[in-house]
Length: 571
Image (cartoon, rainbow, N blue to C red; front, side, top):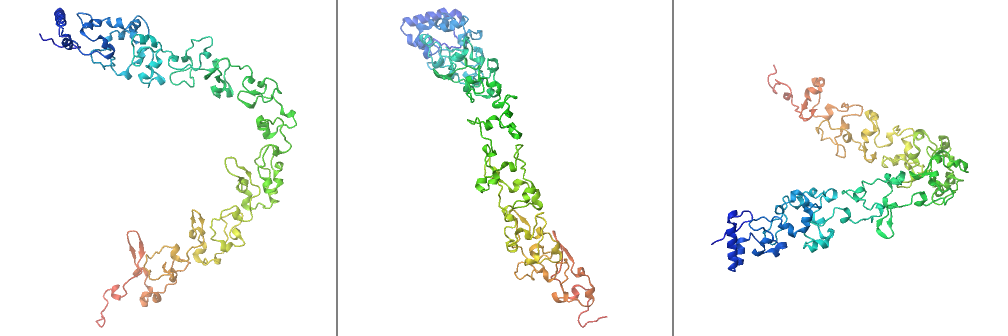
């Protein structure tokens, strides 16, 4: 008799045939052919955790006779799951997980994982356990938490044969079951059951978003609100990793802060100070006018620490430089008079300085013209560099204009300005008021050139306005309107057309041109009265329109019709 292999998904026998099947099994066992029968009746090898249950004689350990159902057999071995079913915590206590074989399928081989995940391990709805994966927990892999390190009652699970590196049992939902209690329960005081979640959430441990210092006996105000927690809550001496959060003294300011007055002003700092800052004195707590130095002008707004810093309880105040530095380097310039701040400044402010134009007129450089409207710092620039340069230089050089002003002509005028400098052309009223005799150069201005703007011939560049090197030939500035028709008439250097042979600087008319002298066609007789354009007609191209001067034909018949031939009939 051939026995069909039993599939775990479908049984080949009807209920009524189970007796027959059982009889056959008994006969096979009696004939000592257990192993071949096992190969035919078992759906497959058991997984490694259940390997000790292999063999036909042990089927009844899990299966009820006459049916494939495991029923309550699983819970007979898995007492920890049975306890959950009786109302304990954990996933198995829920009604959705009441049938073991929905998730745990056997007879799939020794290496088969007994847990079936419909959506994969990472797709499991952790909320069904009563512990939602939120915040920083959400991206964690399962075994980051479900490992032997965090099992609460490890010995009990080991006694039940559990592999702590493989099981998902044994975790506690309390924060401290996985995370170190950095407070070591000291901050919970008389209420040790106080949970971490009263101050922290799962997004991040720091800062504690649910904690409010305003609900404590020491609400944070002013500068206290921005102080880092660790500044006050230092590590406990007995445990360097834990910080003390309760029981700190805070009745008096000196519980945390050193008294810089050494008790001279009394024990209560709040008579003068507020939590917005030590250097802010509240109201009229201290009347400085009772001292030998009443605070006037800008001094009234200076913070106490601005003068009484460190150990300066009674700072000197006879001269300004007792507190203020020598901003003008009077010692370096060997001008001690510059150190007398009161000659120019008052306690109302350093700016504007009280150095009037009348005082400047008596100085070595009286202000004239546009210099009178020049801001002081344009000439008296700050000394030094960096984010905090020293104050204005009161002794700048002024012997020449270029001590302050850049030479925009790049030295091209030096041979004309020797001994006079910029004043040869300019005065102090304005740079634009130029007075220069162009006859001093190799190109005297006449005709229309006398009215041309300087920059028309001497254009600006990125570095300034250069004069030296400007060409004197017409072609250097003016376009050749004849388009190389007179290219045979060049200047001596051969670079440009010699416009001056025909034109003058008064206008563009060719006043110097003589048709009898300068062309190969002498105007005689009736030709003297003919308009120029009658012979020199405009020629229009795509981009230009110009008069055609040369070459032109000069034979009579080239212009006139019916011209008699030489020796012919002239009638």
